[in-house]
Amino acid sequence: MIALLVVLILMGLVLFWALGAYNGFVRMRQEVKSAWAQIDVQLKRRHDLIPNLVEAVKGYLAHERQTLESVIKARSQAVDASALKDKAQAENMLTQTLRSLFAVVERYPDLKANQNMLSLQEELTSTENRISFARQFYNEQVSRFNTAVETIPANIVAGAGGFTKAEFFEIEDTAHRQAPSVKF
Image (cartoon, rainbow, N blue to C red; front, side, top):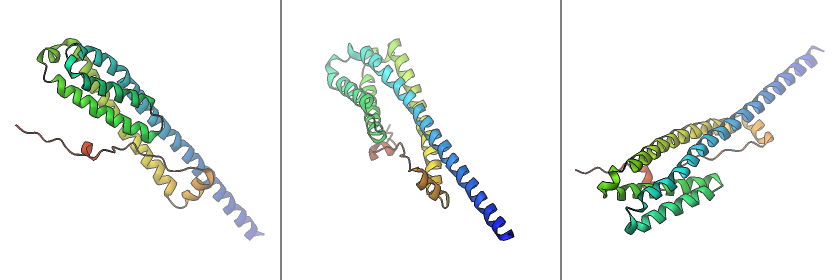
């Protein structure tokens, strides 16, 4: 009788542990989704600022049409991307085209001094910083979730519950990983 009671208590403890592990996975998955939503909010903000930026520089850069068209095309692709991997690639391309636009702007002193342009550049810089912090937070949440999904014995509950590893928001282009060279 005591052995049966001990077995029942152990089964109860395992059941409570499994329920706790399952609920932990649900909570972590929601935290990953929430972190992605924060990135998405900042990306939407950036997407909304870009048309204003393009309009501000359009008159000054009439002969730099290709640069403007590249920014517009990259923004469109970023807005249309839906899968995480596609969105990450599109956003990385948009970042690259924005850098080329700002490099072109540097060659026009009148444009650099334009108050509207300065304000838009400041807004975009602030937004880029927010995106960077949101990506970092998202990747931390993904790392935490993925570790829990792969850790023994919780991986049994993860497999039974249908929890799979989440994707990181990574930089695909290795050129973006390298520090820029500064020459005087």
